[in-house]
Each structure stands twice: as structure tokens, then as C-alpha cells.
Length: 417
Image 1 (cartoon, helix red, strand yellow):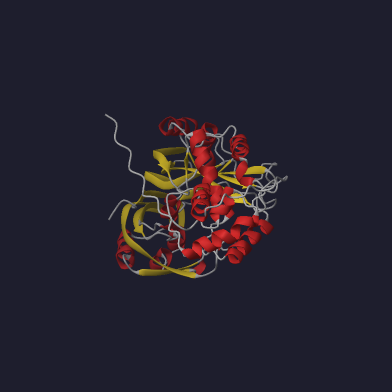
Image 2: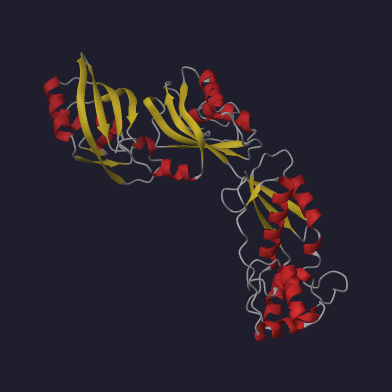
């Protein structure tokens, strides 16, 4: 048994004397039924503009004059629906789409003339030609394609350029969210353009335009680009680890954005498995799912605690290391922008905290710590001191020079609390 269709809202179209007077003034203007009815398009509900025209003509007891040639306002734009529908479908050739939005570009003189007519006839209920055209084109595309029109997360946005007689199409990105583990200490998170040529290619970078041969972004993106036919990517991580640091544990949350995809229906599990096969030993992705643009904001704005394991070169008694860790736990530290990133980040002092720390092991000339710290803490600089730019640093507390040998991110605590 099929479910009964929802009843249509009742048709309302109040015709008071002021409306009829304005309608009578508009009769000799040479407008098509669409444009004539649109003079009162924001009055009443449940009618198309041609139906409004018919109601007004009946109430006035007069026939609506037929325009001599094309309508003097829209110049026949509302008579060419089949043409515009075909142009839209041609513009979307080769693209998968299920949702869409419509826009239009008009001759400014037409839009200005339309507003002048509202004043001349005395109507306070006019609807713009642009808005009506977008709505009616959307209705016809829904019937012709089965896709859903509207502003809610469209796959494609069509712009009908009426003066030029063509349709422009904007392909909206698609998004995939997941977590990555980085097992290779030579990988940056994202593509790193060569500083000398700024990505154009030069002798220094061997013509690649890159400082490093590849990145987490490129290894993850390649199978997804192949599956979608996209033209490029953007990689949005919940923070980033140093190039020579591993990202372990449950992985770092990220969103992969695919530009101009031709295919939007993707077997995410199979594509993620291909990432793990081709990047084995370097990068692993977990929990990959389709996502929406809002997920980028959530990932970028999150600031969870992070756990680290750091191996430090330097001589210090275990008791003094434990004393320093107890002293710093929960205490604010001031970190001026590190020397190593000062060329690309604002020089300012940030307050962060080492929430907790413990000594894992100590041997001749080195020791290993587990730390939990606030997001944005520069762990290497806290250990080494960065020439006094971090205070207090572990080197300062121990009174000996220290250097970081290895650094791993053990966990991103975004699922706590």
C-alpha cells in the first residue's frame, strides 16, 4: 500500500482594489504571462506566475495582451526552458551529481527596468526575474534528471548566463574523514613546495617543485583521486607532527578534500585499503568515512591533549629528571615562536602546559620520557630550550644541554571527555 501524498497547501491570492489597479496599469506594457504575473509574485501562495496572470486577467474582465514579439522585459528568457535544460545537461557531461543549485546572470538593464516597472504600476509584491528563473529552471531539471535541487549541500551549481547564452558549472568538493598513522620519519604531512621556486620547478628541487618527494597528503590522496577523477586535494589535519616524528596510536584525525570530482560514489573501504597497500610501512589510514565540509572546521578548531614519547640525548641523574617532571607538571610554560618555524609563523609568546610526564627509561647518555601536553606545545623546544625562547625548559631545569633524538606522537586525545 503506497503512502498517500501530502495535500497541497491551499491556493491564496487576495485581490484588493490596489492590486487590481496596479494590474490594470500593467496591461499595456507588453509583458509575457510570466513577467506580468511576477509583478505580483510575492502576493499569495500556491500559484505559478502565469496562473497569477490568468487570475488577474479574469478579475479585470480583460484578456492579457500578447506581446508583439519577445516580451519587453525578459526578452523571451522564460520561453526557452528546453534550451536551458539541454545546456545545463551538456555542461554537466561526465560528472556524477545527485543534488544541484541554480543561479543566473542577467543583463543589468533588464533587472533595473523590472524594478522601475514595480514603481510605475504601483506593485509592492514584485518578484525578481533572477529568482523566478532560478526556481523554474530548478523545477525542470528535477523532472528531467531526477536530481534534487536546492541550496542544501549541492554537488554542482549551475549558472545560466543569459546574455552569453551559456551555462557555467561549479563542481563542489567531496570530503573523506579518517585518521592516519605515520610510520616514516621522512614525511611531511602535506605537500611542501620548494622554497626557491615556490613550486614551479627548479634545479634545486629537480623540477618537482617540492622540498620532499612525497607527503602523507599525497600518499593518502592518490587512490582517492584515482577513484573520483578529481583534479586536486586539500588536506586538513587536527594539528601536525614534525617531519621526523612518527604519528602512532589511534592516528591523527584528518579530512581529505577532493577538488572537482567526476565520480562522487566511492567504495571508501576499498580505497582506504588501497592507500594502506601502496603506502605500506609509511602511512596507514583508519576509520575512513564520507564527510561534509563542516567536518573541516571541527577538525581544524579542535585542540585536544596529546601524548608523546621523546628520547633525549644528555646526562642527568634519574632523580633530577623525575624532580623536573614533577615540578613542570601542570605548570604554565612560555614558548616564543621557535627559531625553526619563525620564517612562516608570527613571532609571539604562547602559554602552554606539560600536563604530566614520566621517565620511561634511562641509559648512559640518553633517557626516554612519556609526556602529555596541551595542543600546540613545542616538545622539542621544551626539551632543548631553543636558546632561551622556551622557559622553563627541561634543559634549564636540569642544568645540562639536551637534544631530542627521537619524537613520537603516541595519541591524540580527541575522544576523551
